[in-house]
Structure formats: C-alpha cells, structure tokens
Length: 300
Image 1 (cartoon, helix red, strand yellow):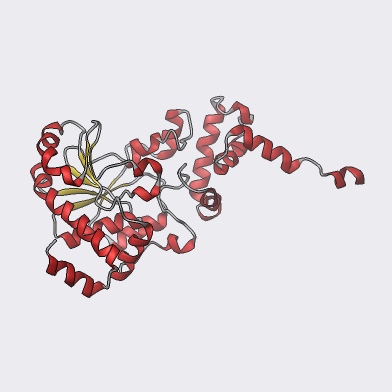
Image 2 (cartoon, rainbow, N blue to C red):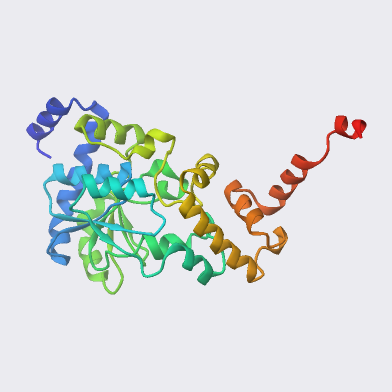
C-alpha cells in the first residue's frame, strides 16, 4: 500500500494506528497474490464468505485492496435464518452453494453426532469448494490454538505453509502443487483481533447480523460443537424448527443403538450434547441435580 493511500484511509475512517498497520499488511498480501489468483481463476480470488463479522471484514478488505474476487457462501442447511436473510439483503453478489446432503441426513449417514475433535460436518458442508483457486479465508489466530498455529499462506491437502515474507520464494512451488481438489489458502486477517474487526466494520459504517446484538459471539452453524454452552442453550428456544429436525436425527441414531450409555434416550442425548460435557460427567451432574437433599429426606 502506498503511503498516501494509507494516510487517506486513516483520514477518511479515523482508524487507530494499530488497525491501519494491519489493514496495510492485509491489503499488501492480497495485492501481491492477485496475479497468482487470476492465473487459476478468471474471476480472481475465491473468497470464502459466511455472513459473520470475520468474513465481512475479509470482504471489505478485498474491496479496499481493489482486487478481483468472487465471494462464495457454502450453505449448510443449519445456517441461522437471520444470517441467510442478512447476506441476501446486504451482500447480493455472494454466490450461494447448496449442500449435496443436509446436516441432519449427514448425522445419520455418519452414525454419530459431530464433536469438537470430530467435526466431519465442517469438511463436508462448510469447507467444500474453491478447488484449483487461490482462496481467501477470514480465520483469525485469536479464535483458537489450532488457528494460532496457521500461516497466512497454506496449501490444502498438502503440507506446505509459508509466511508472507517467504511468498516469492515459494510461489512457483505452490502453483505447480495445485491440482485436483487442492487450493492455495490465504488468511489476510490472521493477526487481527476481535476488537480490530469491530473497529473496522463500525468505522466503515457496515451493518452486521442482528444475532451479534442478541448475545451470540459467533453466528456460524446451529448446534456447532464449537459453540459455547450458553449459545447451545439458546438454540432450542430461538430455533424450534431446526431443533425439531435435530432431535429427529438423534432419535434415528438412538434407534440404531447409539449412545447406550445414555440409555439411547433421544431427549437425554440432546440435553447431553448441549451441555458439552463428557458422558460420565454429564450423568454425575444429572444424578446430583435430582438426588433428594438432606432436608427432603428428613421431611419424608
């Protein structure tokens, strides 16, 4: 980014010094990779979009960078309706892709609910698409230890991670490695904090999905195993239609003989899943909750 461009951006939006430095770095890496992106796909970058604040941030950084890109949203069948409506209204250019199998049928096919350590749903529903492209993602190191270990430039399906400074050195190798379902993944806002993201969107005057104002820290898939317990417990009341379908899928699993440690009881399995506890701890908690107290015993 040219110095005058940086000065103009700061003057126009009053970004903090920390944020303007991160914007500069993000724009520089995107611009540097654009020729490579265009060599794979005539529309430029394949930008992964979800409607959440991070993907919004990524989208608008790409706009500021002035590069060519196509924003793509992989629908999962458990996207919050508020998110779908928000994207349709505010980002009509985003290309939406329907899944080959919905989340509920996927659970039955896999004969298991998804867990933080076994998120097969992400691989199949969320992270598909973008083969043979240079893909932009809005992941941030702050979100998890696993993401903190990621690099700004990586290869999918192959072990090749390089830093921004190593880009020129490895560019040729990355190009020749891409094939089949492979893609080059660039994470321009990897070093951004949540505060950086909100400052950026707010000072740009960009609207955000209403779910953030209703207590949600993240607005990804419903019943995602990465959701906080508090968010999990919001889902049944706020999303009764999706909850009914989820419980039906759990019932099917129980009919297959799954979750016998929970008596293959669909309601109990559902409650356990929302608790995000291991089965042993969940059962102990249930027992303590319903055991009669000393006062109750005396009264009897």
